[in-house]
Length: 324
Ligand code: AMP
Ligand code: TRP
Image (cartoon, rainbow, N blue to C red; front, side, top):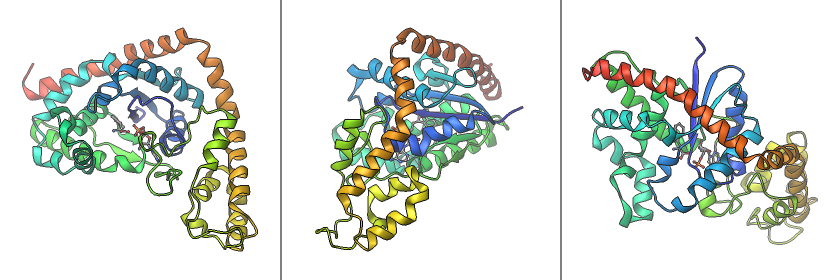
């Protein structure tokens, strides 16, 4: 039997270059080797309760991005988390084998508490347990994610080990799989590219929007004048050259260091490279956007296929625990 891949992402709307380079790229690649399940995790989005009015629209936008990027519903299952409610049942079951102390030391949890101390709900603490339920409900071995998800994956492995120790070998221990770009820096040059920090470039932007956005990026802060030599290793635009123009990468670095290349020209070249690379994606996306019923059909069909696997796992888990 082929190993299974599972990944999920919260429906935050249109996907950005960080999502693509850190995760979606691998979703697409892994489809040829593995049995893949990709999930739009709408229940996870409820933990912060800031975008529920936009939820259906965001799910649709994200599905469009994934399909346009190359997720093939004939090869892979693509579905919405809440359409297969067994995940909630498994979440409750796994919460019984998860010590609260493990959850309280998760870095993303601590960060969220700091950001929003007035909304520390029970679901937020349990976020990694729900994520573990996603992965184990489909008995996935491989989980393509960006670097920020590694602590969650480590916890998932610990929960699985504990479950298996108590009730017998049932769930596989999932392993993270990262791309060559596991942490894409945002245009502020400080933090990871993320929609909430508004330092991102959306895949679905127009060519003009992309250029405008790239021009807002910081570069090397030490480079105040055109003649100042640059330090490409600290520049978020240089980091993108590595992906979009690997053959020219050394040349870009060398001419930046000698100040032959200025930041404005470098950004314009970068925007042109992004626009060229994303052209086929943007064309496919526009075609798909004209067929909303097709997107609904893909997600409905995905939920039906995912349910078959989910029911089997739940039955097995319940038998092992003495609930059946
Ligand atoms: P999110 O949009 O935060 O739900 O993330 C969806 C997927 O994209 C996860 O696998 C993340 O690890 C990955 N991801 C998000 N932002 C970045 C980034 N800036 N660099 C690399 N991967 C990322
Ligand atoms: N926590 C992930 C994120 O914020 C989303 C996610 C939920 C996920 N369930 C998952 C990722 C299962 C991988 C596997 O991006």
